[in-house]
Each structure stands twice: as C-alpha cells, then as structure tokens.
Length: 307
Image 1 (cartoon, rainbow, N blue to C red):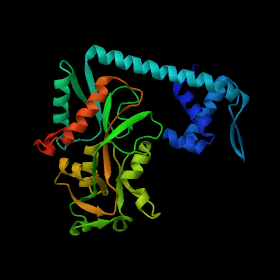
Image 2 (cartoon, helix red, strand yellow):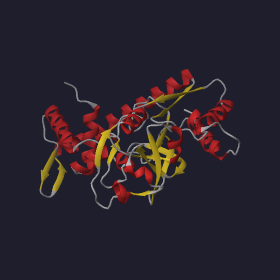
Image 3 (cartoon, helix red, strand yellow):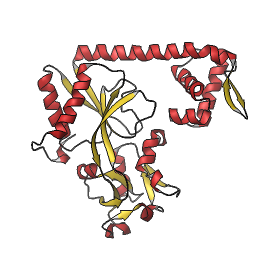
Image 4 (cartoon, rainbow, N blue to C red):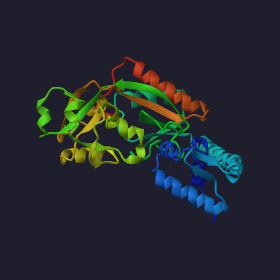
C-alpha cells in the first residue's frame, strides 16, 4: 500500500517540532490522531521514525534519512498543484474567490467592477465553503483568493491583507434576559452557552469564543455550526449566544436574534488571503482592487444586498 501525502505532512510536522502536541496544534488535528498516523507510516516503512523519551522526541536514523525525501515529495506535489491551478486559471480566465460568510460592506461589487475593467475577458466566481475549510479552498486549489476572518493557520503557506477592522458584538436569542442591557462585558457571558465553530478551525474557533478574554473561565458549548444559516438556526432555537462582527450583524440581521456590543474586546479583522507562493499578477491585482474599493468614497449598495 502506498504512503499518503497526508502521512508525510504529519511526519514532517513532528520532525520540525520534535513535539507531538505542538505538531498536532500546527496541523489542527488531535494528538492521538497524529500519533496513530505516524504509527501507520512507521508500519509502511518498516522502521521506527521517532524515539520518545522523558527528555522529548528525537528522530531515529531512519527518520533522519526520510526527512529530505518526504520534504521533496510534499514540495513537488504542492508545486504540481500550483502549476495545475495556474494552467486551469489561464485556460478558463476565471478567478475563484472563496468565502464562508457574506462579505457585505459594499466591497464585492466595487472590487469586481474595478478588476474586470482592468482585465476584460476574465470572470470572477464566488465559492461558498463551510466553516470547517479553514483555508476557504486555498489549500485544495478550489479558490484563488478568499475572504476570511483572522487568525489564519500559522503555517498554512497563506498571505493576507487586512481589509476591515470592526467591533465584535454578541448575538442573543430574542427572548434572552441579557437583551435588556445596552452593552455587555465578557464577565456577563462566562456562564452562557456559546455557538462555536468546528474544533478543526483551531485558533479561529477560540477567537470567536473570546477564549483569551475569559480570565481562565471555561467555555460552555451550546452548539457547533458549519455555516452561517446553521448559526442563525441555533440562535433561533435558543441553543446559545455567538460573537459576530458589527458588519456581519447588519448583513445577517434576522428576527431570530438581537445584537448587543461587548465592551473591551479587540476588533475582528476581515482579510483577503491568497497562497503565499502564488505570483500571478491577476491575483495580486484583485487584492489591490479590494483595498481600493474600501478607500473609494463613492456610495455603495446596502450591506445586505452584497454576497
């Protein structure tokens, strides 16, 4: 049976970190799952790859021998994916932009119009992706660029440009007792069940649960959602509360919930992201058009009418 590229990526993460827990965090997988895959790889190559001791983790001689070949294999495949993506884009003259939630803010129509004026014959498509896809299609090549909320995976090979910084508010079911307050603090919310992103989203999940603003108080999870409509449904059913950016509170204004500001939280950051090794001029020109669209003082459509 052939070795999977995923197993080589897992192996290289452990070889780089020499620490299973840190490697698991970097890969957004559980530590037991990572250990199992390393064991599978060791069975394939018929040799132990790591030595685990009280002093930590180290590579065996077999592990050291495998590192350069594993790295070349992974790098070659990544380069092949990039070449295929470039060839497809050149043939189709289509730029695909991933997103998991509406962007609004008058950004998309202005940016797309400016881009198409500069690149006649191109088409800009938008791909809706679930919250689970942390790179919004960039890793898989489904997307050329993506609108995303920071933070991005630390070692995801992605570059980004922040477009908007805005306050995080709290969405509450309409009959929640805290709707009687004009403003909230995180201390008011320690015991509230929260609607959360999937665990696979790692630090992004923690950010929208405001883990770093809880003074050590654990998070209560009322529901896990994989897209914006699931979040609205969970709010309507009273399964929990959810942090939401001020702009998205306008886009997704619904009768199922109300929104209140939360004092003391740092703002959320909406960015446009792309693969760091993607040097195509059209990709970087679309980024410039997004930045220029937000600097353009011209009137824009209402936020709720934009993808």
